[in-house]
View 1: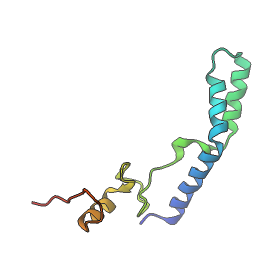
View 2 (view 1 turned 120 degrees about the vertical axis):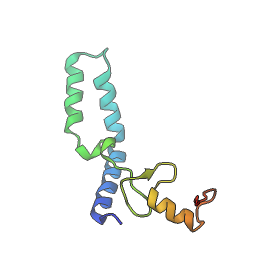
View 3 (view 1 turned 30 degrees about the horizontal axis):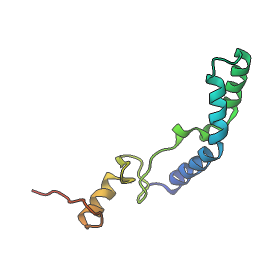
Length: 101
């Protein structure tokens, strides 16, 4: 089980990403638009850098829905390899059969 503080920190980051998504997208579009004057693009870049760091989508970590484990994460199932194996062995995941030989 992952530390509760790490999981909560990640949830806080998810909320901040959602909150600032529109503002961040608008500033990025302005900064990348080559038709605008350089000063205006630079000002948009400065405003973008003044946004909170945790509002950047790249700071969010994929974590297991069950255990909070950050590594060995399967995107399709939204869980770690360990939780996937346990639930598969118990027969709780449809279409998944644990191989044994």
